[in-house]
Amino acid sequence: MSDRADTKRAGRRRLLLRRWLVALALLAVLGGVFTHLRGQDKKAPVRSTTYVVRRGTLPITIVEGGSAESLAPHKVVCEVKGNDTKILFIVEEGYRITRKDIEDRLLLVQLNASEIENRITSQEISYQNAKAAFSKAQQDYEVQEKQNESDIDAAKRAVKFKAMDLQKYLGEDLADELIEELRLRRAAEDAAQAAQNAATAARGAAQDAEDGERARVAESMEELRKEEEGAEEERGPKG
Image (cartoon, rainbow, N blue to C red):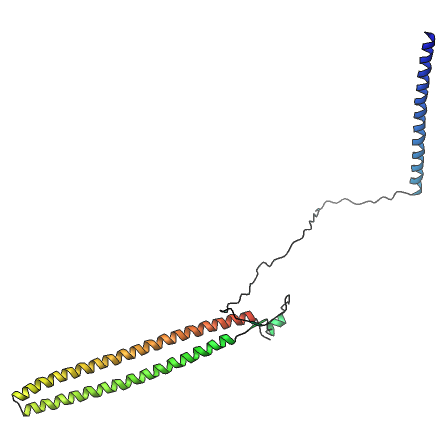
């Protein structure tokens, strides 16, 4: 029994001794590391930076990508009618207009205006033709009016002469002739009035046609003028 107890005590002593040796080894290593670090700190002095604290606004800036758009964009739209309008000249993309360009009326865009010019010429020819037709109708009316007046005067003279003859040669035959003459006179007056009415109607129709043609031509000219103004705005200031 005593041998076993001695053996256990000896084992405990050896275990305790090992633990102390391990602890001493760790302390030695830690001491060496501390000494090494302390030596480095002495060789390289620590630099310190100081700053005075003040009360103020802390700016927070966020950088983000994006694209800029104009607050008041201006779209240039071609208002010229037709699909065959060709661009003869246009400034290069990205060109910046300066105040001097505006003063010098720099040409920005030039469109092919040959079709519009041909239409203007055609409308002017139509207007001149309508004007000539109206002048001829007016002259025809005046001629017809004078002819009607002459026919009425001739009929009145004929009736007057027949009445004088009736007074000289009153009788049955002359009475019949008087009735016939009265009928003819009434027919002549009706014909003259109808001719006069026809001439008046013809003049009114000619006037209406002329007014309509003038209005149509004026409307076409105004439309073409607006198209030209639109084309001028598209072209911009001319140099």
